[in-house]
Length: 524
Image 1 (spheres, rainbow, N blue to C red):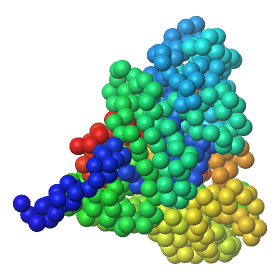
Image 2: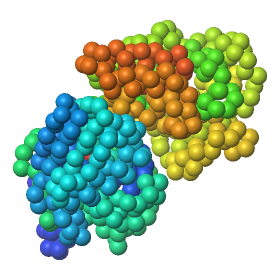
Image 3: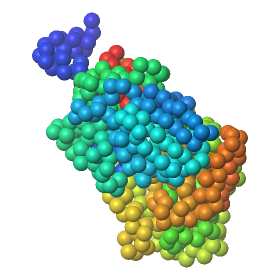
Image 4: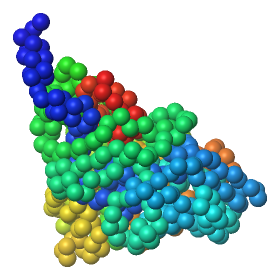
């Protein structure tokens, strides 16, 4: 036996039995960042979505083909030519406080979520009546058929349609609920939470998993094998990687791209991409303030945009299998993606051409504030490349780099940069959020009622409504081609490329595809 292995074995045998038992029943996890917002309905933050699936359950799950599957419901009945849906809850569902899950709880939860989610809002616009005729029945009476109803209620994209007790679901959807009481497979331990450091969950012993279905993404039986899950925040990537390699942590949500070679060499460590839709980067303009209220100025930047350089700044030039360009306005490799409008990205980037186009469009050196989250290595890298591009084409750039939540606060300001506003910001989305027009928040064109940047594109809104009514997949795809062409013409925002984000774990098995979920996971 090698000396290192002998010492490790000796240390394990010498450890107190209680310590060894705790290690066997506790999963130690390093999230990508601290959990700030606990209510998954009030935010588009992915870490809040992941937390939400620990504590709350959903009426439907989503499988690896992005299709809805029954989760809290036994099933549904569709009648009256698609205008009446009857959903029946499974037996045995309980809230963490011991009360039964009732249909009226779910009705209140759906209504609250729909006020924050565009897909949910579209569902409710098509709904004449949403009611709970009895304790296990949820009924939709629709104005028109809405075949995507299960997908709306079960999508894994943000924000999540999380089921809550009626007393919590009656909370204003623009305020967080005061308690984390769900019916999901884990309880949230508020008494153990240390903001910025530790979030703890314990197994909900009375949770009743489904009996059927493939375990993937958020579908299938949610069987829990750990008594505790501890999320320990480690902002420094090197520290987080070292903790995993040393066996101090079991799972690291993000295997940082510059640490992949180390992780791949580490004994017992598995590096894996869970989500084939990856992440899609973007820069959003403020469409209401100069200079980007001018469509010609927005379009001028296409000539200089270099998506390959953007992606290589994230994953490194050697990891060619971990990124994809060109990127349009839908996730590559999914049914709504196309090459419509790609001509503006063809050929080598031309800063001189973009500079001349800016001059012709009337840009006169106005200050441009580019906001970049400082606590994301990926977004910092994207921001640095984009900043360099702006300077090379002659724009007067000021970078505002702050922690993500602070950036969000400034992002809500609609005034000019000189009055605390902004011109551009860098962000990313899960590719699952760019699958279809239904939940694609960044592609909306509703002006002041829409996503930050407040793009006004009435034609885009009309196309989105037409997509919901399209008779088949071919018709939907044709509409999405037109939407993408329009997004390029309007320069709705700048897509930067798609990259795959691996995760890394050691000595555990059963890690599901999709994003970080904690059922089905057990010691190897």
